[in-house]
Amino acid sequence: MPTRRQFIQGGAIAVTAVVSGPAAEHTAAAASEGSVPAPHPLLTPANEFRDVSRGNPKPHTLTGEDLVQARLTPDTWRLEIIADPFTSDVVKEPANVEKQFTLADGTALDLPALIGLGETCGVRYLKAVQCLNIAEPLGQGLWEGVPLRDVLRLCGALQNVRRIFYHGFHNNDPQQLFQSSLSYAQAMENAPGDPPVFLAYKLNGDPIPLSRGGPVRMIVPWAYGFKSIKWLQRISLTNDYQANDTYAKQNNDPDSPMKTAAYLDKLPNQFPVGRTIYVSGRVISGFSGLERVEAWLHRMEPGKPPVVYDDVVYRAAEWTACLLEPEPSDWRHVLPGEISPAEVLGFDPNTKRARTWPLRYGMASWSLALRDLEAGQYELHVRAVDLNGYAQPEPRPMLKAGKNAVEVYRFEVS
Ligand SMILES: Nc1nc2c(c(=O)[nH]1)N[C@H]1C(S)=C(S)[C@@H](COP(=O)(O)O)O[C@H]1N2
Ligand SMILES: [Mo]
Image 1 (cartoon, rainbow, N blue to C red):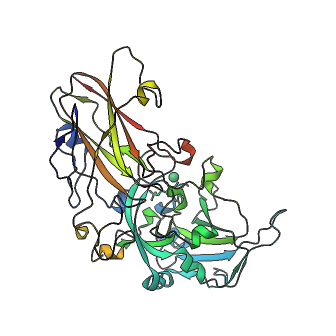
Image 2: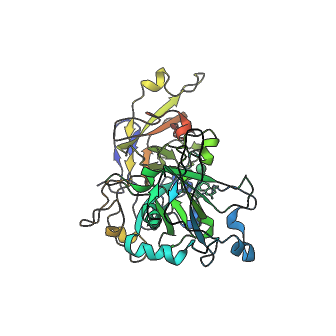
Image 3: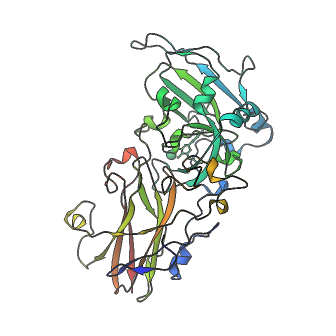
């Protein structure tokens, strides 16, 4: 297990362990002062996630009576589950559901009912939220809730249900309506070791605040953020076999699971000669898992064009492994309250250790020390290599399936 001190790995690139500890502060200032950067906190505080929300006003800016009317308080929240009457030229029969839950007849599910279900079949999972279209992780949380399949079981026998459509509160403004979907199989089943889709009502041990999509938010662990619908209010069971995702209509692949990818922290662009430069960032372990994060330092010669991804110079690059933040030695310092790692999916209940590190669909920090650089212009390319041996952005370089272009950090030493 790496410790906080550095070791030299030949040439100018040295590998540095990030410091592990509770609520370690991570700032670009640390890098400029020439100290080992602390890792990002493993749990992002609820109000420090980067927000991606549509609409004007955005649902989480509502207050008072508007909030009550929107049914976005813990007391007024309701979930409707209905059968979609949809048929078409090729879809001859509509979905049929034994029991629906509607506002009209007063059967819509309320928060105590959902939390009650959680007492017997609740799950917890550490998930990084990442937007398919933003090249920066939005945050990572410990989400808690009830598997979607256990909620759907309340509906009794289902016939002709091929997809689950769902959306959150919206003010009937098409700009605010944001919807997503899953296949029936994706909603009902998960591979061993993979977490199920769930309806979350807690984040980091507390009720999900309005700002993060509470009272109840869908969490689709393997997916980009656009499937994790905030302010969830309606599930529609349909025989339509096509995705209705808002993101599909915006030229994105609505079926793409999160890619394994490394991301750079923002760092200064200039350093004096002789200063050790600490580079850092985060890495998401996506669908294909994470083998390592690696970096290539390239000195830019005056007059030479910049390196282009996959050009001759890029292909000849020599990559050096970066140091990954180790799994916390004691998760009790990381997890909120009385929660034991044994109660979190992805952990071995006996050893209380993560079954993989970083956790799948989770993220951790990485770092790298650059020493003894001569004056000049440099660029550092950073990429993740997955458990199938593919280096980012392969095997899915087409970015409409998720932004994971290799990030480049340019700086000057003078
Ligand atoms: N109701 C609703 N849910 C939503 C969205 C939205 O605009 N409205 N944005 C989605 C997108 S595209 C992303 S990336 C995530 C962002 O989650 P965050 O704001 O909690 O970081 O929420 C998703 N859920
Ligand atoms: Mo997004």
